[in-house]
Image (cartoon, rainbow, N blue to C red):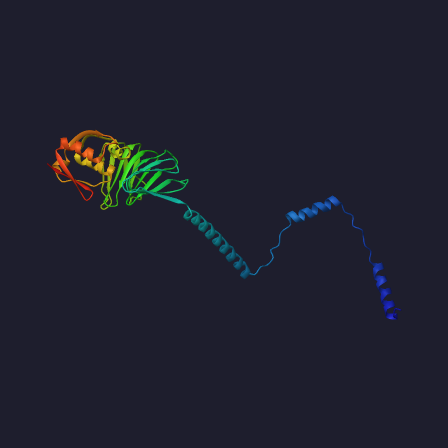
Length: 302
């Protein structure tokens, strides 16, 4: 049962309610919808206050995340490069080895020569590392230059045939062009411009010690004879003849007479003939004598 005071309070509240009149709102639903859309799309946004400390911490965190992401990308790239598979082929002493590169180029390695190359060439170039003597027959690719890197020099080509002799025992790197064009760069050349551009039957001699570059005319066929065993000498000095035979048969040949070394000969020999047979035939016209000492050949006047 309500108390007396509560009854009086209810009566007063009822009187206040009767004094308030609620007027119904007349509105067009389409107009109301347009206003709501306008408020959502065009209404000004309010910036909620953020502590400056948190602001700077957020910026620092973003930068840290960016740096870590960049390092991860670089690390991944380096990892991919380091994981690139390389192949290395070395020709054993007294033999010749034929190597087919990923681009179908063919390299003939002479005795003790070696070549190192990637299992797959990159999109920028075709680069190999080399030492010894080899005959290169390079597949043409205008978009990817072929680069031979040696100790002290590099040779760059697009497609050609050339012979390189880069023996670590001597200071001279010898590059001979048989067909096409090659650009030769000394190791200290940072200009992007070749030191020498060779034409067929030209040879560049580069001295690793003093950097001297010498270009001379030669018979390119002489510098590929060691591959096929066909020796065609035409008005060549005995020194040139013996240099060619020395490489083909992987033996050191010494001419003890300067006058004898300058004598010129014209002769042709084929792969089935041995070194002893060739030396004996030349001996008739050159009038020299030769002997073998500890695996090396010495040629002297009769």
